[in-house]
Length: 353
Image (cartoon, rainbow, N blue to C red):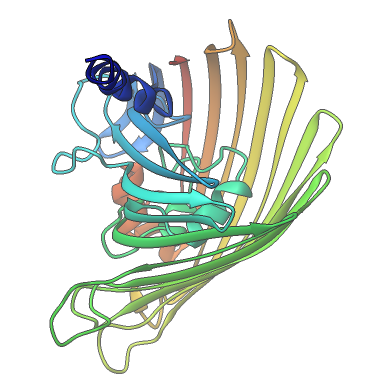
């Protein structure tokens, strides 16, 4: 009888023991404010600012201790518009992440919707951590993400990130799943970086094929950052190319150096500024498609608490040559075709949970 009672007690406690070894965290960011921008279709625009600094999001991150230094993990993260409540991507609930995996001394292996290995590196050498939500201050979105779908994440992705000492390395592969065609809709990516005290440096590479495997986009990216007292300096260079979809047309080629600075003079105050220069040849794979694009921005953030901040931001994008009629930038920035520049100013509030 005593053995039966003891077994019942242990059986009742086992769910509690399992729960104690697991954790699920709810987190998110939400912000909004006002924004003015000129040279848009129809003229200047003054309206709601859907948190230009970072994506409005909520997510769940889970981790279960499996013993022997291993843990099962998952992440589900959804982006949304704080002005309307609509999903960031109307057809995707978890637009920012939807993956499961395992982590341990060997590194991290994950499966699902996520960033590529090259994107992972790009966020580390970007002053905003790759979180900015507009081409106005994040022009790299067109070169480091999925060029053919304009998606910041890759579906059906297998990713590995490992480390040894200050050295990190990783690779990812997104199979297209098309019978008889191993290239269609695929992405292959790799990265390696080294952290030494206040300095970080590394590189990333990725190649993406369109859905029909008739065209590819390729990015080589190198960069680093250095902590200098309260400031962190960012430097990077990207070489971006897109093959022609038709015979005889030239390959697009962009050379994109950038510099950024993040300064935290006090715990409640932060300043960020960056500049990107794009020297493009054969935009839209056209023989006469040469042009230049300059992107600059500056922002100030004042923290009312550890989680809540006020922000002010100003940005400028200038265009010459074929960039004045580039369809991707016209659509992404809402500009009128042929405009030589656009300037924006944003004021807002953001909080985290």
